[in-house]
Each structure stands twice: as C-alpha cells, then as structure tokens.
Image 1 (cartoon, helix red, strand yellow):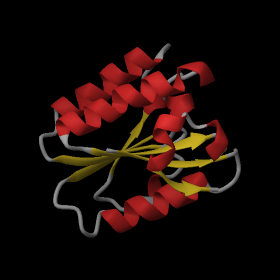
Image 2: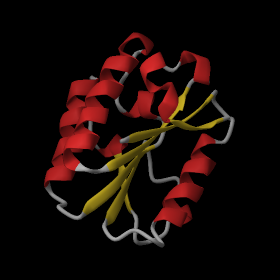
Image 3: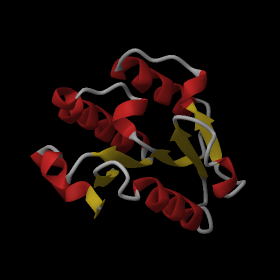
Length: 139
C-alpha cells in the first residue's frame, strides 16, 4: 500500500515525513529506507534508517527510477518501508503521468508487501481520484 503526504511547496511535507519515519523506526521489525534528493536531512534521521541520496544517481524518467527502487528492494529481504520525499522530482514525473506512476508503485508495494510513504508537491485536488483515499496528510 502507498500512503501520500501532499501539499504545495513549503507547506511542511518533509518535516512531516521525517517525524513519521523517525517514529516508525521505533516499532519496525524490518528495515526502512528514506530516498531524498540529497543528504541535507541526514542528521535529522534516526541512524537505523538508511538514507539514499538519489542525486548520486542519474535518472531521466520514471521507468529508470522504478528500476532503481526495484534494485533496492531486491537487495534487502527485510525491507519493510520506503519513504520518497518530493516524489515527482525524485522520479522525474510530469503531472500528466502521475496516476500511471502511482499505479505502478502501488502494485509493487502490494506485490512485495512493502509500505511506501510518498510526499508529493501538489494540492489534494491535483491528486488523481484513484489515489485520494491514500492521502494520509494534506497540508
């Protein structure tokens, strides 16, 4: 299952993500990976959370990002949760492709039994109707 944290730029989505992931690690029985555009928040994350800076890798489209995420999943059989901060930028997604990409990641999440928590810089109104129920925080 995917969970969405949505809101326009500067509304506090990253802060919300960091609070959630740090509280989740206390009760997690498996591993948690946090994907971000850089290492800026490294010291705000619990040291048990694996931070991956995607700027160390080059993606030109969402399919390449999807393959990258599949690689992370394939290397960690104890992976329980994945956090994506600023999903559209990380995954090189244009607005018109958001629903298709979310569908793909939702299917992967269900198949591998890994929860994805995703922040998206958009208002709740701009989220595709099929995913409105998966919004857990709207800022």
